[in-house]
Length: 344
Image (cartoon, rainbow, N blue to C red; front, top):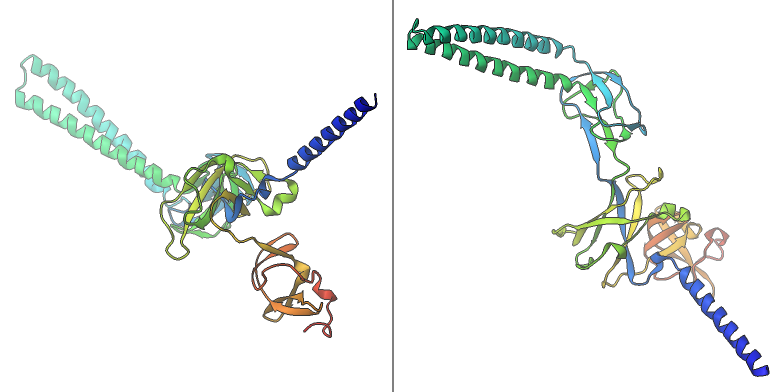
């Protein structure tokens, strides 16, 4: 009995240890994988359009505002088309005249054809009627082409959305003068986004899979927002100045209004390159005196010494140290507590 009781206790303890170890492993974030290295990136809209004016004219109506959702074909703004209307009306009149001439030529041809079959007119007279009919058809076709061009010109005065999306910017007001090439409305599609990053040449493995790529947005890490890669494109050229290649990753559609083009993101890639660890310090440790940016670091005697640093990107209440600090050992987290008498 004593041995069996002891055996049961050992089995229970083993199960508890195994379950605790499993729980600890499951709590690790995939972005903390030591085999992945982070690269700075930016969120972009794959479908992005800058609607520019193709004609000159005064803006008579602006129908949208920044942040508004629009449908494909929806009118965004109107430009004064008073100068184009007379030309469009003249084209319509020319079409009516050309069609009338064509109808008359067809009737004349039919009469001449009937007379020719009865040998009442010569071959030459019949050919003249046939030639007049072909000329009338050509004039009608040319007039119709000119009218279509006039209609297309008239459409330039109405700016419509090319796709479903969100208005990003409207840098023009009613009454402003629209000139050819001037941007009137900027649109983007929030359902088609991608990540663009400049990574060192050779950092991307040729056999990389989408499951190995991790993407996060530092400003939304608290919300647990992580993006899923849909496809990857590595540009074949290398920048001669930075020796980096452009990496673009299309991401799966997300229904989160906080995710917008321009956000700073991080892309984590499996690479054999030796990547230095980022040094992050709290903002309260930074001291700014004029043009000097520094931190306090304690020496072996515990005395705070002022050390100049160069800072990089900021994540929440922390900031990256690019140079001037190799570790956070001895760093004074709150520089406001250091008096001038203590600092050296």
